[in-house]
Structure formats: structure tokens, C-alpha cells
Length: 267
Ligand SMILES: Nc1ncnc2c1ncn2[C@@H]1O[C@H](COP(=O)(O)OP(=O)(O)OP(=O)(O)O)[C@@H](O)[C@H]1O
Ligand SMILES: [Mg+2]
Image 1: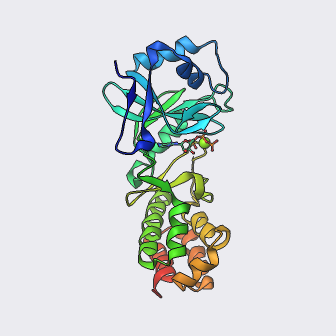
Image 2: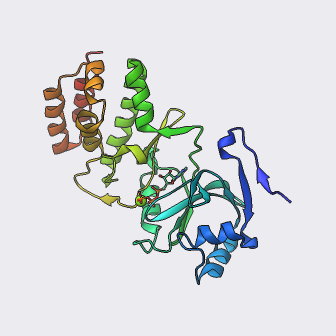
Image 3: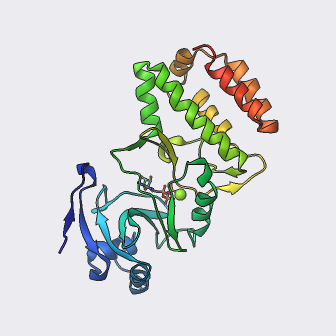
């Protein structure tokens, strides 16, 4: 019987825990942050009946458990589904202030045309099963940005920012506000040339989405190497601000192109 899995990236090597075993890992993940919970049997059989076979214990150490990550709403681990294969399983914490992950999953599906969210495979109140962002392929956007800024790789920097801005403009045009793009650190990842955004639970429909504008305002003011970035791109701050103001009134392609022009035309 399989006990462990090895991947090309050893960062994903992990121990297999079959759901039907209901071993301590399964129990602690499904009852997180408690050691036990009264609905453990219901949760386990729901996952088994939905086609899940095992959880893979890998990632960062959280109170002695290895997980892909955890937040205030959920814990995220890798799961194997009999038809869909491996993916990320985001499970609602028992102490979460939210009662369901359905809203988050539906926003991710609505935002799919932008390519920003990981692909959603299955969801219920208690979980979302979606595309895995493997740590060896996906790095925090701000870390990649820091590297390009500190090494002065202007062409790669321009490419990274351009593709991010295009995707965020697309998201604005769909009328979806992710609402946490102003803090790209934990939410925006760069995966082999693709921008990926996680944690869509605070998303909302809006006639005035601020995805693009709050991302640029992060770059201009809150990013710790903002002045170095400005030096590298050589843009005129006043012109960028004026272009952003115009963009906010129409979200049109012309106003978007004007932002791009003011940010990159001096390169
Ligand atoms: N698809 C994925 N692939 C790899 N890791 C992921 C994936 N989704 C989430 N993670 C990891 O799990 C962590 C928690 O995920 P997420 O931010 O969605 O949870 P949350 O409970 O909604 O968080 P918060 O309290 O910040 O709202 C992330 O910071 C990330 O490290
Ligand atoms: Mg969240």
C-alpha cells in the first residue's frame, strides 16, 4: 500500500493519509484547530463519497501538522481525488467566522476568464478543491518583484508588470473586486510566467472595482522598493496619477492603454 509520494520537487514529497483510516493527521486537519470534533465522521464520509481518497501531508509546519497553508478561515492541504487527481483542498476551519466556502468558489469560477484564480474542480460549504500552485513553480509576486528590482532586470520587470496589469484590467471589466489586491504579498503568485491570485473570499461584485488601481497604488506608495522601481521605469508620477483618475471613470481600453503608456514609455 502507498505510504508516501515523491515528486520531482522534493518540497512536495509527503506522507499519504487515507481518509478511511481517520488517522490523527486526518482528524486534526478536518477538526483544525481542535484535536477532535463531533462531526468528524460526517466530514470524512462526505469527502470519501465525493471521490477523495487521501490527503498528502506536506508543506509548512503548523502546530506539528504539515499543511500547504492556513488562514483564519481555512486550512489548505493537498488531496487526491479518484477522478480529478491531485489538487489543493481548502477546508473550512471549525472556528471560522464564515459558514461556507461556496461564495469564494463561485467568485473564483466567475473570474476564470482572466486566468487569475486557480481552476476550481469541486466545492461545497465545507471545502473547495482547486488547482494546486506547486511551491517550486509558484513564488510570491513580491519576492519575484524584489529580485527583478534589485537586479535591475528592466525588461523582465516590464513583462511581469504588464501581464499583471492586463489581467487586473480584465478582472475590473468583469465587475469583480477581489478586495485584497492592495496586499499582493500573500495573495498574488507568479507561476512559470502566469499570474495567479488566491483567497477570493472577500470578493464582491462592484461597479467600481479597484483591482488595478489598488495594485498600482501599492507599487507607487507602499511597496518597500517603490522609489527604486520608479527610478528603473523612469515614469512621471503625476502623469500616472492623472491616467489612473481617468481610468476610474471609464475602465475603458483607451484609459488602460494610457496608464501603460505613462508607466513604460520611457524604457
Ligand atoms: N492553490 C493553492 N496552492 C498552494 N498553496 C495554496 C493554495 N491556496 C492556498 N494556499 C496556501 O494556503 C494559505 C491559506 O490560503 P487562503 O489565504 O486561501 O486561506 P484563508 O483562510 O482564506 O486566509 P485568510 O485568513 O488570509 O483569509 C495561503 O496563504 C497559501 O500559502
Ligand atoms: Mg481568506
